[in-house]
Length: 297
Image 1 (cartoon, rainbow, N blue to C red):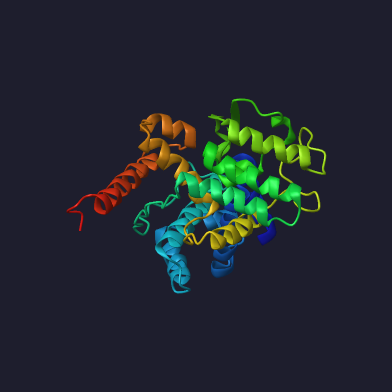
Image 2: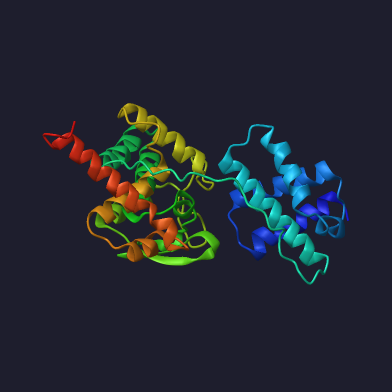
């Protein structure tokens, strides 16, 4: 097989078989391409014979290029997945990936924005837009992230069939897992306002959020708009689109939501992914204590 055929098969497995996100597919295929270039492997059998030492050597080469622990962990996951796929294609009875322990990653605590800051960010992007409909679009997107706890990729994957929005929206998240999220009147009205002003036909099967020329809106444009709004409001660099989803979770937990319900609303595969918000809430309470208690200093 050629290098291109190996990578195409891996790409199709990830995109069609595993239904991974486009970003993950690109990253995992790039990792596989680097492994092929470094080892000269040109068939599934050669790849299937690779054991932990070969993968450690490849990871060491990448670490020498300055990879962080988090990036190295993702790289290792992609390498193991590629070799496991090769073993399956080669017909091995044991198609499991080589057993390897990845670098330890310290989980960071998300830094939420306040409810007022979330709304002010949505207003700021609207006011700074180059056209009225673009401002309405950006405001609707940010309110979906904060008001419904959606990932930016989930919001931008919505199509015209969600219109008109009701009280609940079915969202397709990672791994094609679907979940129902409640839609607040503020969010619903923002989406309706955008739909009324958008110059493009928002029909079933076509993207709900459009770029200036009518194509699908990119994540980069949303991130750019929020960066400008963040600067205008003197908010820290941590106030990103994804921080709005973190804020949604943190504020719900602070208001008494239980972890299981929060797990469902966020679309987390495991409760462990949701438990980080208990640390966020504790950090928030500690900050309030330090600033309000007469002995807080």
